[in-house]
Amino acid sequence: MDRAQKEKVVEELGQIFESSGVVVVAHYEGLTVAEMQALRARMRDAGGAVRVAKNKLAKIALEGKPCASIGTLLTGMTVLAYSEDPVAAAKVSEAYAKDNKKFVILGGAMGETALDADGVKAVASMPSREELIAQIVSCIGAPAANIAGAIGAPASNIASILSTLEEREAA
Image 1 (cartoon, rainbow, N blue to C red):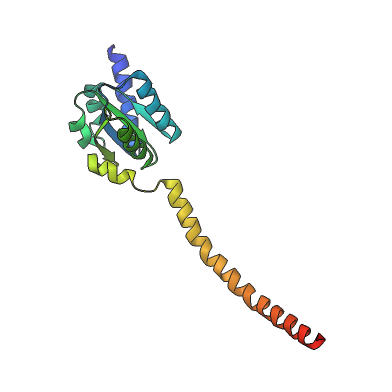
Image 2 (image 1 turned 120 degrees about the vertical axis):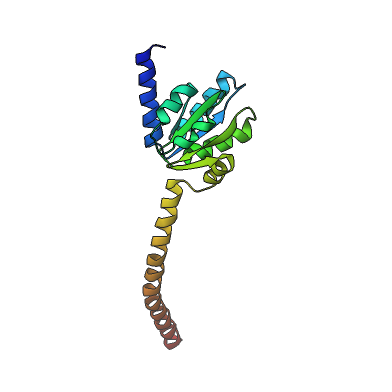
């Protein structure tokens, strides 16, 4: 790899570290190509990506970035899992680590906050952005449905009373 290629990789990694909602660092020693492709596919489906890069280049890319503290995790055979959604990469990484013992989560970063392995697990247990939006919409919609029911209830009560009175008079 010549100097121009290295500079390009450092620039790409810098963009990843700046724009990602979460970055997870893990060891992948012993994973087969098929297992790595399965991880990449899972991450792609969740809206994230997986990147293997030289640790030295990743450390250079981390300089001056908010998540520079994860540089200490970059030892051995490491892989970076990242996503714009602050939860997606952590969820997929955690699920994959449960299925495959060769994939070991070391930690990561969420913005400026450095995460250890337990921190990544905690982030993975949080609801995703879409789940949060759905919960908020249901909370907003519930009072409106209750109001509509309350407004319609007296009219239906009056209608049932009137029909009962009509039935009594007819009998």
